[in-house]
Image (tube, rainbow, N blue to C red; front, side, top):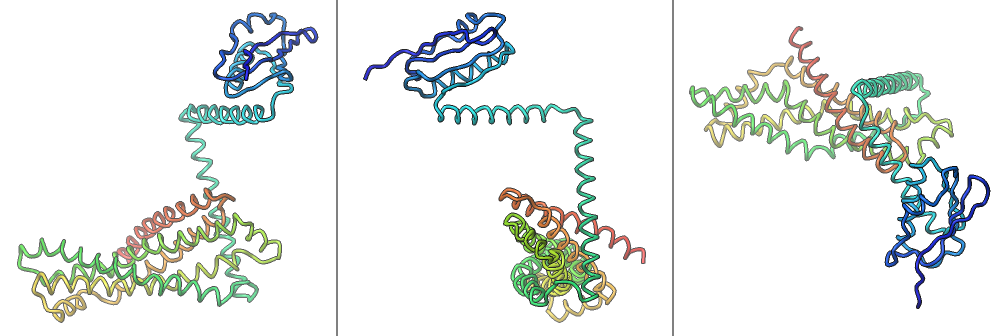
Length: 374
């Protein structure tokens, strides 16, 4: 099969408009005509260039490269470029290439903003986040009032399902982490207390550490990663599939139907998980005291009971209840404000875990200060 060389001819359509007629086979194996010579042949008074591919032969990437370079040269000379009778495939590829170049240019421009612009952007994002959080809080409070008035679509069946999901199905991972935390506390304390012959006080360390802080904190972090992320993914997927919009269309409040059962279930089960984690942590410490420090189980438990009182238990349980509300709030908030794409669901899930942990740390600090003052 014979291959003709790529050529072009210039035709003056009207004053200021020149048409470039492409002929021959514009493929990479054939050297394309010089673009510099073409631009020099165009009269200075020209304002528009039209590329006509009606007589075009075979083409491949060579044609696309020539047209891309021609478009860049026309833009540099302030000329308007118009494509005419080009193959449909070539036009689609050109559109994709120009769209990618536009996005790259936008990213480069976005990265060159001044510090003042970036600070302003962060401030606006923080304001929008605070506004969204305040709005969601108000909606939850109003829906709770509707629940007390018997007008909320919150269902007991959904509540019991999430109680099982948050409670019984979370016991294995809570058991593992709580026992290991108790073991770690025992080892850390044993190294120091053995120097003074005060091994028995390892029970005080483990008991107070688990009841006051570690039981509630570790169970909260576990539930944030397991349940908070699940809430955000579930609600985010429903947002993507427009199921939440369908509920609103039917006159059903998504806050009452979807959020309240999750929120109440987590608020109820977190204190119970905290008490269970405290027990498992003390048993883990007792195991190390029995196997490493030669302490009997009765000695360890009696010393732990003497060091821990009801007020200490109340502090840990109160913290865990607050953690449960905050974890459920963060997971549902990020799920309800999720976008409508798979990437948005992933971002909402990640944001729910991060937000939950931040809420846990901040609330833990505040509650610790309050309890110490009281």
